[in-house]
Each structure stands twice: as structure tokens, then as C-alpha cells.
Image 1 (cartoon, rainbow, N blue to C red):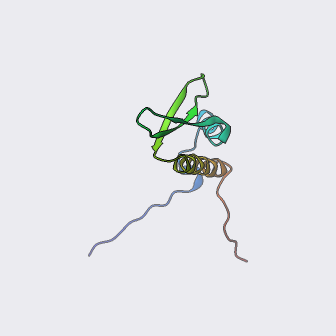
Image 2 (cartoon, rainbow, N blue to C red):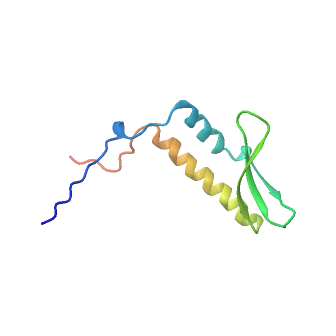
Image 3 (cartoon, one colour):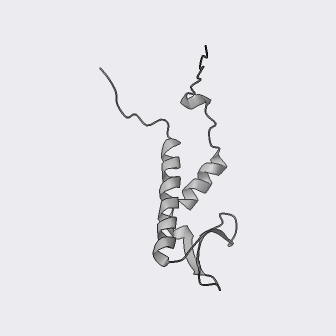
Length: 96
């Protein structure tokens, strides 16, 4: 007979992001820190501006502007959700 033992983690036991990570997430979740550039091969590259310098960090390559902008919007949404959870767990439903 096989037994399955599970372990659950509470919010406090999960690895918590440090201030540097939260600063990065805030920076990358603002659309003003993104741009789209065209490469010599015709593809479009999405980039975000570095926090520490004027350098641009490449992220994705897409064939169309719509695809590149969708990739940026998806990244912004992803990091915005991460920031939301730094405030603690989200209560979905309570029972009385």
C-alpha cells in the first residue's frame, strides 16, 4: 500500500521577495520603461530599460508590432500580479 504525504506551505514559509526584487518588479511593470526596436533581420525586439543605467535589456522577439506589444502587456500584467501578492495572500472567500 502506498501513502501520499503532502506538505503545504503558508504565506510566511514561502520565500519572500526582497526590496531589490520588489523595486525591479515595480520598474518593469510600468509601460514607460519598455520599447520595441526593429532588428536587421526584420524581427521586432521588446526591451526594458535597466534600473541602474541607460542600457536596454532585450526580452523577446516577435514578427509583428501587435505581437511585440502583446508580449510587453503580458509581461506588465505578470509583474503587476507579483507585486499584488507582496501585500499578502488574497482572500477569495470567507465562511461564516
